[in-house]
Image (cartoon, rainbow, N blue to C red; front, side, top):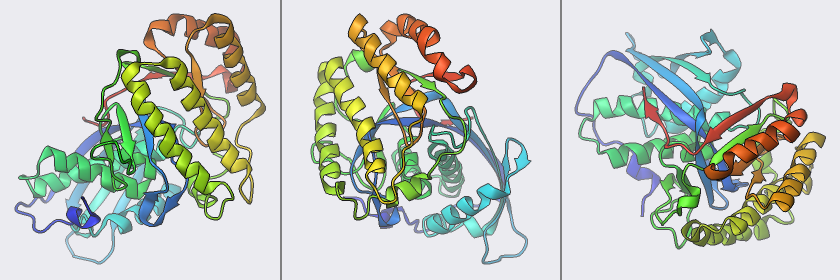
Length: 361
């Protein structure tokens, strides 16, 4: 059984004065939702997600050894090429959390240059892709300092570090279907990092499509951190955590058999449960917009009339992820253009699909 101490390095065998790395890391969309956490970014329940392909963060990390050793972190942060001061506190907090696992961090000045292929803070898990990309870069530097590091350890620790920046970021490191959180019948699953789903996945789920309807591109009404905190003392929290385990169990079987009807039931129920937990917390929030409900009802009507296995899921925001197998994509995209685009802000939507995780550039 892994513990956090397994990720504290013993000694580095190499040195480097300056250089740079660049990684892209994708967003992900949870099928079974993680909502609620314990200390140190430990999830209150397990989750499983599809890794996306097109919605990603691209981060370049330049580093140079400092002339004078100081007890401070030293970094500049650029977003889309311009200084972004309001991101810096989150990066500072991340560096403080991971310092014990990356003890070289105070020896360098870093320039972090990052950009997204999708709107920031609009409910498409930009913190997940952003923190995953940053963790991959730091691990590339650590692997330079410790060339004997194995690939398995590299990716496991990257996921572990990403989790300390943003919980769901640990699901954006590697794999197309990723489990995070201890689940008795999923081998290797851990609260500390995400793991590639180890069981059989039916052809029906290969290259699954996700079209993201941008109902509201603005900042989220409530941050994920605040949302997770609302699960403390929530009247329905314990039953919700048990339900997540049950639904993950169901998905193990569904992934094996390819049963799309059962997949739809689990995924849509999970999405609505997430929002129900927010509506029944104190303080309470309604994260959907009127157009979110219009889209959901239109999807239900279309599915009932055509028997096409298209469904929706939601993150903690108003945008709708429309999920469907690749073999019905022509009909579903036509439906989206004909009936759903009208509910999107400025008619905007993003076409995505299952991807493979972070990529070195």
